[in-house]
Image 1 (cartoon, helix red, strand yellow):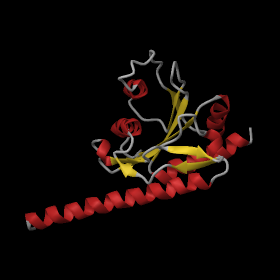
Image 2: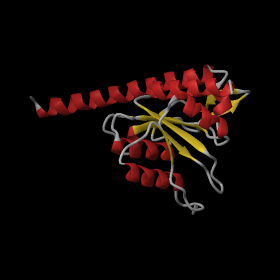
Image 3: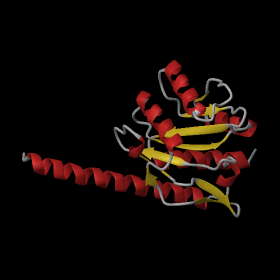
Image 4: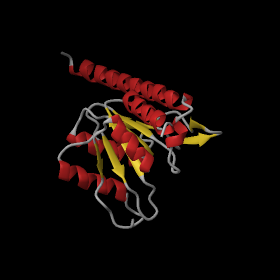
Length: 197
């Protein structure tokens, strides 16, 4: 029951949790990089996948890919290894999602178009379109603001949220799940279905 020992072991446990989360994220990214179908649902702004620690409170508790996942020679390629605090936008999205459902600790973004809408319906995904938003004042993340308003209205986090886009904003699909492997798996299933339409 030594207070000093408890604090020491807490730090070890936290470091272990962070290491495990980074390894899970690396594995999920490897799945995306190996897929010949995934690049077909990658948006122009590239992809990121983010996952949060249990009880995450801030961006430093959310790991993502610095520089995102880009399309290189027709394949998905992570620019760097995952790190904590690597994506402001995706961290804000997952932290908001966790407020309404702490079990949903991971998110990935993919393109949104007519074909993707059909894929979501075919997969039986519960999806919600974000509230419309005004043209962006460039000092704000209007997508995050629209997401916050949508969640406030719903009082829950759906497994898929669609952003229809707007001036200077590419349409986007955000897929949420319990961990990085789950959201990567959902994205890969969507990619496979997308290619068959």
